[in-house]
Length: 238
Image 1 (cartoon, one colour):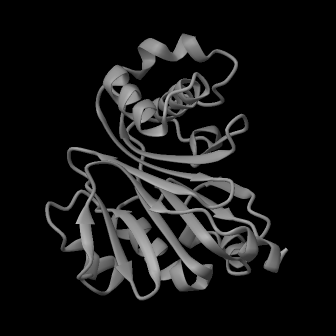
Image 2: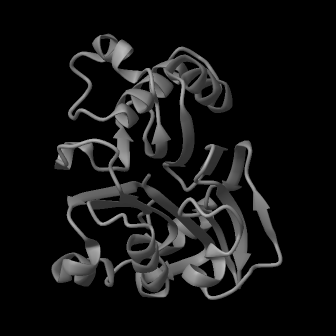
């Protein structure tokens, strides 16, 4: 089971503000096989980076991230259910056609039955990428995001937590995992969503985030977490 963290705010959030949370999720979630991030650039573009290994043991990557501040962040911390563990399997994935970053936690149990449908589009071997491409194709064919996510899960089977960030900063979350529950919550001025390291209750909050947020909600289905950053805010920082 991988871990996902999503954070957004009206003002740019430096990675240094989030670093303790990210590293705690990596450590306590036993998710140090690989990591990836997506953040919103000042012009509204989505920037995705992925790497194999533990973020906490990669000082050059941490130094690069510490130079970044953004109004929207997604982190994916990998704990694979299957090997090998290669760069092409790291997340978030990125949709060139629809311009969004996609991070998945869970297991699409029937994914391999549909791999041939996406020949030429898949770079790696994981079930998550098949789910990503299926959702992308359903949306290209005119389905709404929520309908595409539901149909993907119904078709592929299994369990699914997903975070999606669009160009401009629109962020959606989708929680339909059986064990690693997805929560949304507020800490200070930060709107957040996080998986729960397979903990049965909300005790992970104090372990990772140092607080039990009063405004917390267990997500079941699709939910808009963050609306697009306004054109005025983008142009002011471009």
